[in-house]
Image (tube, rainbow, N blue to C red; front, side, top):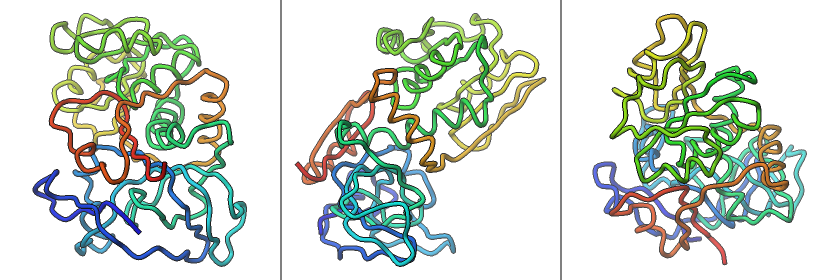
Amino acid sequence: MKAIVATDQTAEAAGITLAERPEPTPAINDVVVEVQASGFVPAEWEWPSTWVDRSGRDRADAIIGHELAGVVTALGYGTTGLSLGQRVIGITDWHRDGTLAEYTAVEARNLAPLPGDVDFTVGAALPISGLTAWQGLFQHGRLRAGQTVLAHGAAGAVGSVVTQLAREFGAYVIGTGRAADRQAALDFGANEFLDLDGEQLEDVGGVDLVFDVIGGDVQRRSASIIRPGGTLVSVVGPAEHRPVDGLAVDFVVESVPGQLIEIVDRVRDGRLRTHIGTVATLDDAIPALNPTTRRKGKTVIRVRP
């Protein structure tokens, strides 16, 4: 089968290639999925699991990508809850071969059904972005109606979902980003927008929850405006800066089928819109995964027409 594999950690565009790899076989409690579309997170280049296994050994020519939409084609021993021919979405284990391939093996417990009225391209854009937003807001941020949320990167793949979900659940959302992102963030439901390059973050006043996808100095400044009892949620590694009187939580997204179903339901009835920026075929994936200019929204690779 065709697959995109990582070959060199030091050079992005030169460090991946389209290769032929053996089709996977399902282990116990696995399924094999014929991948129709795969989302991609640029930060994957920085994840240790892209380059080494759980024992720290080199993962030579590992298949990249971890979110998928596709069709179940084989069931491993003991697998329950899924059937052959079923449409599914989900996230593969970080240390296993990924989803930028014609087939992938994945634990059945990491998959949720994808209704027939949701396109595979849309489905592939949901697992990591949608679950990151859901878990950050509700599990870790303990969002309540009436709170003020500062959503960094509000026009991005994750931030746009954060903005929409927070508004749905009764929060007042202040989105941030670059000046060119203002209208997109407002279109996704932000009540206000702050240009991080041209406006002062401290002018926002107090907020109850910061959803941080940037880190560094932006995280430091964000922590300083969190109200007593508020929360800083970070998806960029352990929080270096913490609120004076509040919580700082960093987390790695998990594939939770029940939450995926909630997210898909919102896409189906129009409460939630995806922000897909680039769509390419598997044959044309390498330049799409290594853009020379900044791209907005989610990158999705259509593995099959």
